[in-house]
Amino acid sequence: MANRYWVGTTQDWHTAANWSLTSGGAGGAGVPTSTDDVFIDGNGFVLCWASTPFVCNNFTILVGATELNIFDQGGIIHGDFEMQDGYFGPTGGGGYTVEFKGNWLNTGGNFSVGTGTGVDPTCEFSGIGKTYNLNQLSAASFQNVLVSGEVTFSGTRLGVMNISQRLSITGMMTVNANGTLICDVDISGVNGGFDVLTGTLTGTGRLWFRYRSTSTMTAGGTISIRYFRFVIQDALAVLPPRTWASPCEVEIEYTDDAQTFQLGDAGRHYFMNKLTLLCDVAPPSQHTAVFDCDTNNAEMWVHGIFNIHKNAFPAHLVTIKFGDGTHVFRGSIDFYFSYASGSSTELVVDPGEGTLILWPRGRKLILP
Amino acid sequence: MIIFYAIIFLFAALFYTRSFELIELPVDFGITPLLGTQYRLSRVHSAGDDYQTYNRVILFSTYGDQGNAKFVEGFGADEFIVEGNTSTYSFRKKTALPIELYEFSRFRVIGDYRGTGPQIRSWLSLTIVAFGLDIGYEHSIFNCRLRDVDATYGQALEAYNSNSYGTNSNIEFHDRDVRTVITQRNLLAERRLITPTPPVEGITEKILETA
Image (cartoon, rainbow over the protein chains, first blue to last red):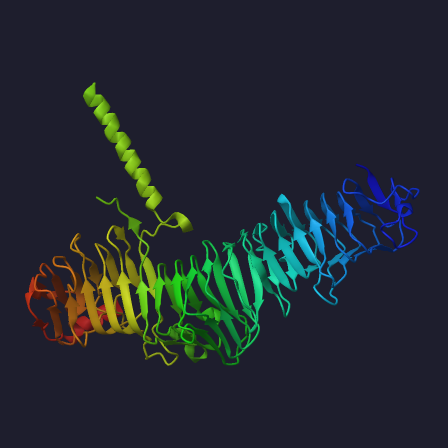
């Protein structure tokens, strides 16, 4: 194991002369191997470019780094990744993977995965018991993300990871709050969504899913993250059935006038903690929002609280269509639309021909 | 010495049972509902005088699982069924303004023969049920305590039992100053029409409404 400092006179990562044993030292130390620690610290050619896959142990971009680190065909970082400055950007297209086996820490600079022709790069987090921390003001932008290990994501920023395309979880992805800051991972692109979900999404933070008319959710894996928010992007959004494990609170946020959120398919949707309807459209315009179980004959099982609050809909006509199914509520129901809210906010229940079963959770008795 | 070991054994058995009970608790939320689950099924459209009306609402509690519940806002239902065991279900006390009422077209209570039956506390807010009160649909013996049905308006409540073995039910009518005006016990052997007293004088109403 040795240190490799970037002192390139050309842009090529795979040139032995572009690497030194010391900061700003003489070149010729050799191309980094999987056991070598790489340092980028502003002493080399402004472009550090790996046109074929790279490997290293720890990868550190130090304060003062001005280089652009560009990777065409992915690579493997066997150790920890730390970025204090500079730019880290796998180029788009090609379907390559940059694998982070260790911890991931970003305190400065610009981390941004590019787009191109074909499948854009995947950043894979494969370490066991590793951490991902975005501790700076700028966002970290990803295209595809695969969590195959057991990694905890957090940081000092509200949004610690922006994913423009697909998120796959085959291991355990833990998104944790940082104190009172409810950190979130944000799936935001027009094609954003889940790909493979056989693992677990958990933690005390939040996952934002900017949910479109073309979006869908897989029924696989386990989702027990504290908050999972669907931010409705289009006039219609349809959610297939799945189980939202406790303590996951599913938040459905309306963002525009005349939006409908449908529970999809004729199956039962299990919300094992809370189901909350929200809105961020400002008054005073009158808007409509529809929560629809009717169209698809969907059914709900809400184990915690089903909550719609007038303060979340300051100027709305909110309609709940229960349809003909049977919905079970084991916790409280709180549809709070009071007289005091006046005519600016209104709730209409379309009961259909279905049944609401109110089954309050009780204290189990010792059975004889 | 044998007695000593027997006592130890009994304590061990007790603790074993207690731990079993703890396992059975709904610990998944860290919340053990002590006061009952609260339902606010939103009473109003914006105009303020139109109740949300649901199709069928079943208030359910299995044997051995005492889940109490409380409704804090009025609403309507075409059919409201209570099936419970030893649980207490409360409807928010009727207030002067906004008026809290529960308007059910059909109201059915199904008890459990193994327990004392559910207790339903209307707090004067349950309106007369248009199609009668149906008690004891499936089980033979239970106790349904339907308390504080508003008798102010002097309307009749038709109570009947689809099962001729039903006994031991207890329906109390109160006027608005919460005097019991009529109590019916064991009334369910046959179909009965229960008629409360005429409305009370206005002064009593006023006291209650401003309370």
